[in-house]
Every structure is written in structure tokens, then in C-alpha cells.
Length: 139
Image (cartoon, rainbow, N blue to C red; front, side):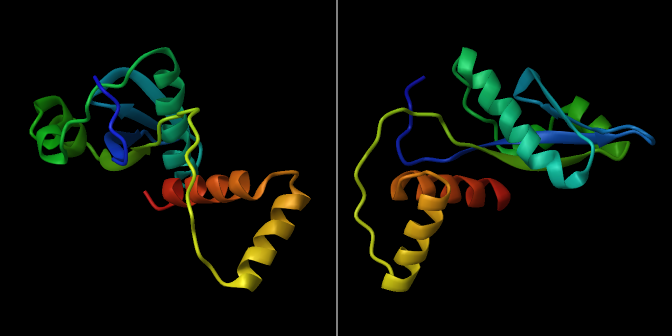
């Protein structure tokens, strides 16, 4: 499968929780990818990490649509017992760097440079890290 430039892929994950247990996360498109989370705040970030780790060893298939997922009998059965679906973004780890020209208010840029320096990062690395966190948080 060729890499799609400029296209964010989202995978549908099934989240289930039995009383007294952690949240379990599985991916109907990726039967061998699993994740867990002790709190609901960690479900998406842990699922993102599971996708990222699995992708280190192989290419992820194209994701099925939400509609295709909910039409599967095994998914309907899980949903009927209290499971729920979430969208999980997959940001490919691509070592290529590309130049981008952005414009912003000078005070914001100074604050970015200060925060990046405190963390020992370049401006670009800091902005990329912030962007990735925001994308993953808003999934």
C-alpha cells in the first residue's frame, strides 16, 4: 500500500470494560492490536501508542469506514453488551522532514522559542510535538 501524503488515517476501535477491570481496546480492522487503559482519560493515547507500535513492524491496512465496522455482527454483539466505538488517529512516523513557512504573532513566537529552549528542543521539534499532542488529544 502506498503512503498517502497529507491524509490522516483514523481507525475505529472498540472499547469495552468489565466491572473491576481496565478498559480494553481492540481494533476490528487489526485483530492482533490491543490496548488497555486504567482510566478513560488514557484510552485514546494508549490506543494511539498501540497503533504506532504495531506499525513499526508492518504496514497498517487501509481503515474500514465507521459504517462498515458497525455492520459487522461481532461488533454489533459487543456494542449490545455496553462496548463503545472511538476514532483513533494514526500519524505515520516518517523520518522525512519538509520545510513549512508559517506566520504568527511575534509574542507567541517568542513564547514558543522560550518554551522550546527550556525543553532542549528546536522550535520545529517543539511545534511538531505540540501539534501531534493536540491532534491526538482532539481525536
